[in-house]
Figure 1: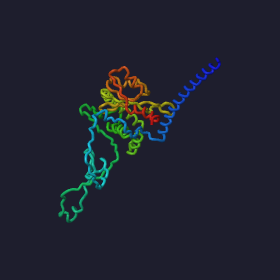
Figure 2 (figure 1 turned 90 degrees about the vertical axis):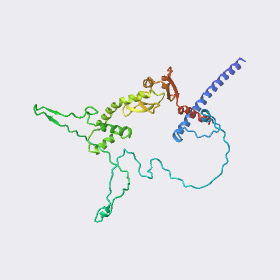
Figure 3 (figure 1 turned 45 degrees about the vertical axis):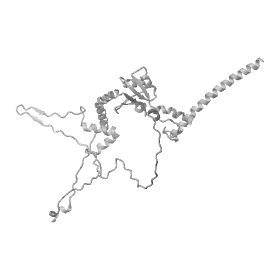
Figure 4 (figure 1 turned 180 degrees about the vertical axis):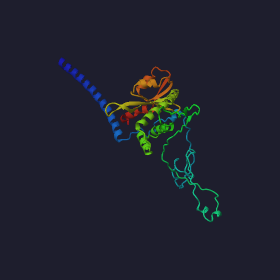
Length: 338
């Protein structure tokens, strides 16, 4: 009898263990199935998180944020049929019926066309009473110019001493670049995404010999001049009542032979539509604390724990999470409920 009881207890213990292992394996299978479904969609399916599911029982936001709509009353209607030509789609960039559209800042080169009637023996029988205007959009190649300052050297007759007019002060000390050249260099690179090696080719085509290393130095030194503006804008962003912050990876610096080091951009967006990009070598919370020092208001971020660590024990900070990131948890669970 004792042997039977011992065997039964052993069986019960083994069954419980098997059930626990079975439940654990089922959970792992469910998790791996969701990951596989997400991976298949990233590789072969639609990556958008928009869900086009018509659920008539779903409650709309207007029912929560506004007064209920008044009941719709039946209005007598009459069916009228007619055919109308569909107008041609025309966006704002199209040429209008009045001709080419442009602002007052665009230079206009006037070309006067001669009238054959005004030349010859019968020219006195004609007179110009009006002009017709026809405009064509033309392009002139970008050009560079060398500013040559002629500085007189003056000799005092009585003392025979020489003096000269000093040269205008350069924006960058010891540089041969005019401020217009530096501004164009930065605008072409960062606003119109024209790399320095292409700008170097354009300079060579224009007959100007300048090394690419010099262009890189000009960019670095010119950026240093803009640092006070960036700092002032960053300080103004910190005065916002609502501030959004995020982080995105970017390769910068060498991390070994043939490899770039992973670093991070931290954009900050204020309620005055101002944007400031900060950079750090790591994704740690120390950079968040340093950049948001002195901020008081609502901080809009994703669910990254570095923002939680910053907002912790700060009553002046109201932490708000992004709705798009919150929705991703429903998206991950969609394979289990749909």
